[in-house]
Amino acid sequence: GALDSHLGAHRREFLLRDRRHVHGRSRRERRPFVDGHRAVIPEVIVGVAVGLPLVGAFAILALGKWPNVRDTVGIGTAGILFLLVLQLVGPIKDGLRPEHPILEVLPGVSLGLKVEPMGLLFALVASFLWIVTGLYAVGYMRGHHEKNQTRFFAFFAIAISAAMGVAFSANLFTLFAFYEMITLCTFPLVTHHGTPEARKAGRVYLGILLSTSIGFQLLAIIWTWQLAGTLDFQEGGILAGTASNGVLSVLL
Image 1 (tube, rainbow, N blue to C red):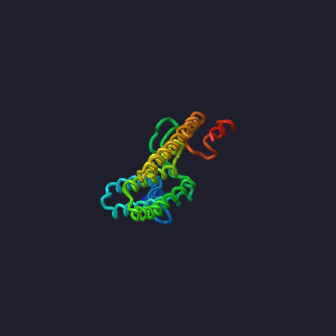
Image 2 (cartoon, rainbow, N blue to C red; image 1 turned 90 degrees about the vertical axis):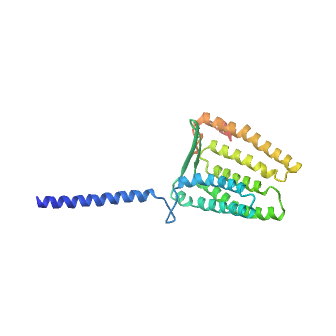
Image 3 (cartoon, rainbow, N blue to C red; image 1 turned 120 degrees about the vertical axis):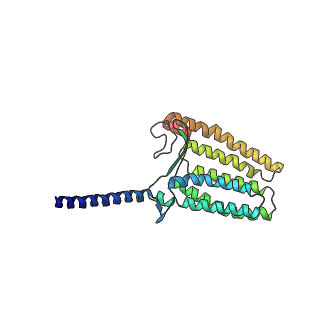
């Protein structure tokens, strides 16, 4: 009886140690790491990368009375965005494809984000160039004593948010939505000077982009959805095996 009790105690201790080891390992596996350091969950980074420039835009508008602080916040937001996007390089190299759903509009039609290698490359370039162009724009605007600088930098930040959305689009509908967002929020940049020539150029700019995107891209997206039943990007193409070569030629 004493021997059985002794063996039972050892067995319970072994099981407890094993259980603690398994639970500890599972907790570690759930903690994402990038380059050996604990990082934010990649799915969260994707959403923050799109939302951060919008927050920066509101901050820029709120700080318009203090140009030095405003421009510091703008450049700082650009730097933080680049570092955030850089955090996604490790997971993508490891084969992960982080996703961040936003809203389902219709069956097979939704707003969502997903990181792919080429999209990540685009996001890295765009976020880095925001730093470079931001520094240049501050010097240019101040050197030429431009008016409405706060408005310019705010809409520039919104355009970067839309660019992140384009880079991380999970489907054609999301790509279209963020592309239209870029068109609309860059209109004030085109017409920034407020001269008759600038306003005319802005109307031409807006007319060409909206007419072509709605008249061609949106119709192609609707047609694709009818053929494939989905707009999600996938290996081999959305329309693989669903349409003839003639239809594919028209859609392209």
